[in-house]
Length: 425
Image (cartoon, rainbow, N blue to C red; front, side, top):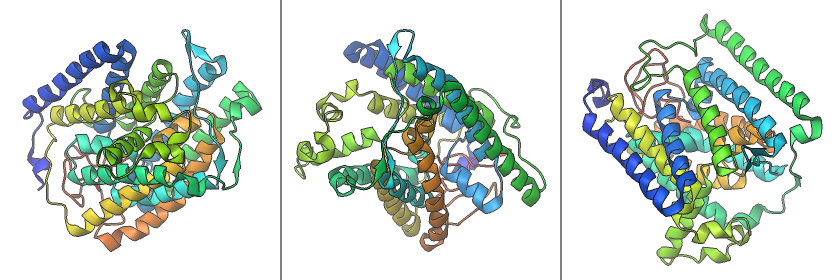
């Protein structure tokens, strides 16, 4: 039995206290250095990490589980999340402001660069064991392989920023907003119909293959602070917290832009490169991020808050139990997967959060292209996993490939098995 499985709820109060203190102290520091708005975004990041961990809500594992076993709870939860998101995003974006705060969506060109990047990202998710949000929350929850994936995710994003000019001239449609083209209510109804159809189709396939359809509204032993949350709780929390990000930051939730900032600053500090001359940073919409104090960077603050929120959740659940022995094959997969995640995210205008979740919530065509291209990459990544000693699919409740302290995907399970059995979004 993995150490995480032997850790009982309530035995990690000091870790929980330290994580909570760090969140509070960080909020106070950010409020004094950069203002109340950014301090609130720091706490929103913490809430996102808490919700992701307690609901074991993810993307990589949800798609893997659906493709391999037919179980569709994670996919249906994503459809619920997107339905709630568009219901609150579309009217706000159409109005142009919320309570006097100007807001804009993530609407970017849809072309070959996005498609190739999302395809690479899909492969990377399955090799690295998670996507952007999942890598952050699993790292905070004690999954040591995810920490390695995260390191190379940052490196891959930095390499993508350095090499951005290579892909700049690929054919692409101009930014295309479905609400702008179709009208607010036709676009909203169309999106809701698509989400409902997908949820119905995957549930029907699950019933045919498995005999039952797993619930997403109920979860045995569910508790608000210690988990495990039903997937529906996580879906609602992520949709509403993304909307809170829109209101506070003026744009939706994103993650990977900060990775490029971290890596580029590190490369400059180590004397490896001068990023200011990279075409990626010559973009006038980005150059300020390279020199702005990190305490003023909302994406950076939310990412760090997310990790601390996941740590708090893991400690309250009694599941923070990192194990440092990874294995050569899984470690190699984490390195390659992280590089593909970072490079692909740079090409695709973001990851599963900023490109897919926030892109679709913004009504952008590129968000739909992202998921269409990421799914074949996910399928290929599944086929590559055995080359690294990772299972293509694992029955619920079995220990994962690393035995780290992230929660497992079985909605009825209470204890953890490792990074490869979690949803790993």
